[in-house]
Image 1 (cartoon, one colour):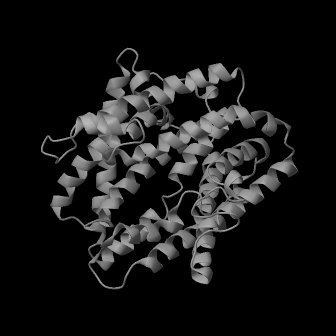
Image 2 (cartoon, helix red, strand yellow):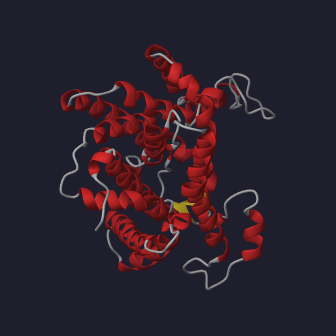
Image 3 (cartoon, one colour):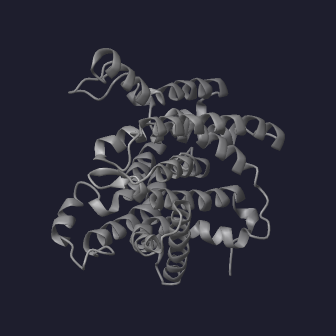
Amino acid sequence: MKTTDPASRIVFLDYLRVAACFMVILVHSIEPFYLGGEGTYIASPSDAFWVTLLDSALRAAVPLFVMTSSYLLFPVKGSTSEFFRRRAVRVLLPFIFWAIMYAVVPMWGSGGETDAAGNLRHLALNFTDNAGHLWFVYMLLGIYILMPVISPWAERLTRRGERIFLAAWAFTTLVPFLHQAAIALFGRAEIWGEANWNEFGTLYYISGFIGYVILGHYIRRYVDWSWRRTLAVAIPLFAAGYAITAAWFWHCIPSEYPVNAPIDLAVEMEMSWRFCSTGVAMTTVALFLIFKKFSRPGRAYPLVERLSRLSYGIYLMHIFVLTAAYDIISQWALATPVTMLLTAAATFVVCAVATRIISLIPKSKYIIG
């Protein structure tokens, strides 16, 4: 297997990208155990326990991808046009290819039926219903558009200035909880300038995934800690963040099973799982700091490096495979966590092999990035 010289790569980002990719697939392998029925469906206390235990530890996956992009690409070097050209080839064009595939190719169990024409029309505005994971690419493209704009600011920003911004952004991760407090106190969720006719409140412009971009830049520029200091910070940070994400989700689950309720319940349960919420931000920072210490290639690195290069293609196609894998494996009457993990592992392996085969085709970068 031909690989790039490790000296030319940031080794820990390859490990991190592969881990985050598997985490995302595992998240989607867990969804059938609490989404279904009327919208929210949890069959038993055991399912509720395993969903809470595992998924609460995985929500950092998407922010880790954003921080990886930031660590590699931000501030933007070179011309803006070249930056956009590279992102178009590596990110946008494969995204368009797979968005069309999800629109026209029937999913497993659909009986070969799909509204291809309607789905293609819908793509003009958003992803199709069977490709919800593509929301991530829309967000990432927005981040890429913004990167050249704020790069000069980031280059001039002092360490203290960056800390002030990150502190302000960290406060915005409380917004989901503040909305709940506003509802409890005043019967309305809006805070600090928000209204049912205006979502652009005071915190809007410093909130969201842009914080992870600045965070990745800050860690690359200023954080070079020993293992001892890294673990002293990361372990308590992860434990506290995990407690927040898990406690809220568990608290929101009704006590009588099976739980079969509208999707609104799942949305409420997932509030602490939102990618820019406090607990998830804490677990993201903790995991990024730990992975940063894996700077030596090691024996497994050639495989990891190859999988890292294939990870975007794996991500784009994995729902096609996962729906089939879950449908087959769920019939084996295995324990809940075994079904979750086996579905994710099978999906990852099949997608990795498929993406590797596609990579051998000329111009495959337009398909898998």
